[in-house]
Image 1 (tube, one colour):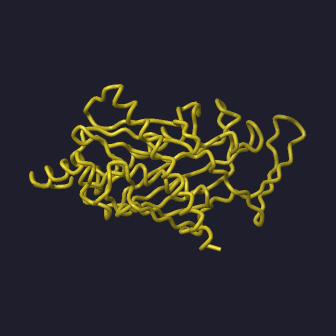
Image 2: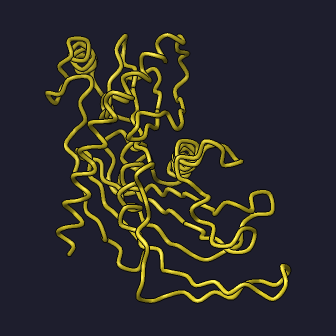
Image 3: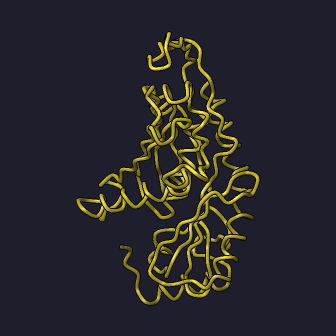
Length: 285
């Protein structure tokens, strides 16, 4: 937890109320974002994202697998977050494990929809090579390197950037003589298909401090929050998922306003993130 004196708390809350935060931003402004891609050569795709003093890394590993019996027309994506003990003292031991699980679940809810895959922002049907037989399993591993607030939005941005950097090997499939026979697959070492991230959303978290809510909260600002709503929004302004944390309840009209702000802010954030990813990939070449 961030320890603030009463004077510091009043200064922080007063600045938010006046729409001038401690670091000079308005309530709806993100901190500067920096993106590097291809930071883990062994992965199919990877990215490092710095949002202010928060730094996270995401990597994508693709393996051929078999679709589940319940969803033969969908591939599989699993997301796991690890909070490095060096990122913050509270991440040591059980505190880090609990936060890792909370972030993993929130990312899956916002990016992958429900257990059935309904509402998934990542189209799992694109990962199927042969229905019921062969699919891509994507393993998304994310690491919190340093933490100064707004981890969920930073992790989602890193995952989107890592997916942009992901190349799936071209696969030639030879079907068996009978439907029961498992197809033969030939995985290319030279040809790769770029993963389409056009529909992958960003997450915008609105943090309520006092009577106001802010985007991209720092650790100090989060220490004063009563609740937070995280909304995943794609480039078309469609809501792909929503999750809330914090004990304080929110009036439905407030949630509606927060979602509207998230939709508005997300479009600029997507534009900036796209530019940063394009610049990062250009510097890789």
